[in-house]
Amino acid sequence: MGCAVLWGLCGMAAAVIATCKRRRMTAWCLLGVLLGPFALLVAVLPSPAALARREAPLNGQAGAYRPCPFCAEAIRVEAITCRYCQRDVPPLATAAEPGE
Image 1: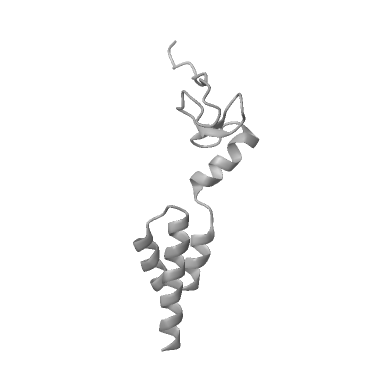
Image 2: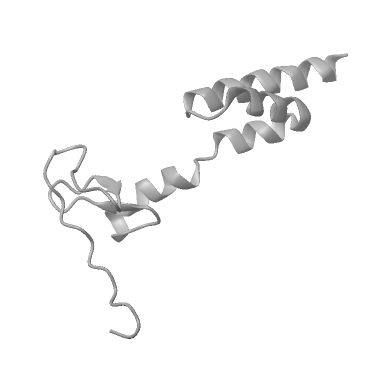
């Protein structure tokens, strides 16, 4: 009985953590109930998009993000305006296509 209560609490805790990180609450609640404490560990880990946003200002382009050339905040690669400083961002130089 105590084990079932613990796994149910893990499901609720995983759902709360996932909701704070803008992930799907019901899926994480189900994962928490099925995987117990292991789901809590996975729910606490940052998402790949969050990692890319964090690495973009440090390493240049990282995944789908790049640093703004004016304020150095992480913005999407396809952005034409920085959402932080509101300045127009020049497009990234694209590699020449083969055959040109």
